[in-house]
Image 1 (cartoon, one colour):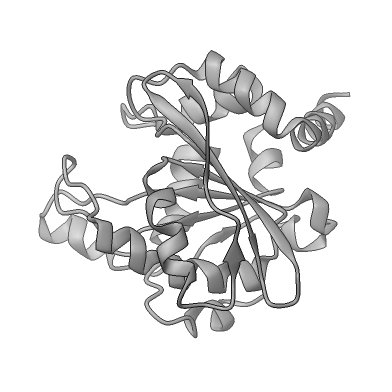
Image 2: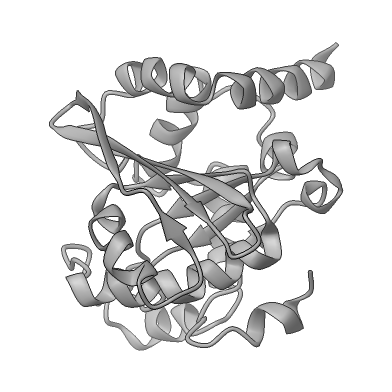
Length: 228
């Protein structure tokens, strides 16, 4: 897929991160990580930065790969939820996955929250991203998007049997769903508590080890190949 294909998607503000090796992976190994929101501080410089179509990619480069965390816990907690540590070779991992920011407008303060309509409307560009990236699994950082899934799919050629509420971990229910396109292709959606605050990465790791055992085993093998 190309930037031109992404930019043809209606209401897409930010290009997704697509790792260098992602397109060459077997479909069963394709993981799309889904962040929730971007936030600017309402200054001209911050607003300008957030207006760049490459902003999501810059976030992945700086925070996830380079580990310039700027005091935030989102990515170190997320890394530990996957691998129980934050010491693995981050370029190798992030070049195997894709990342997309679900809400396609910035919040104007760090305490801002997307509305129900924000989540509902964001499903439509997301589904077009799915058509292009063809992930087997989408891992959402945050559970709120699940609340509007069924409503949104009624206006599309995707279907679902509904959202399942699963383990209750650190004051949030894990949620899962399977969506199917008109050709019968299925994508697994997993929603975990947002990793920014009050996040028990060890407990969520136990959950993900159950829900994504084959995927995490495969990633572990790729990371071990770097150091052996």
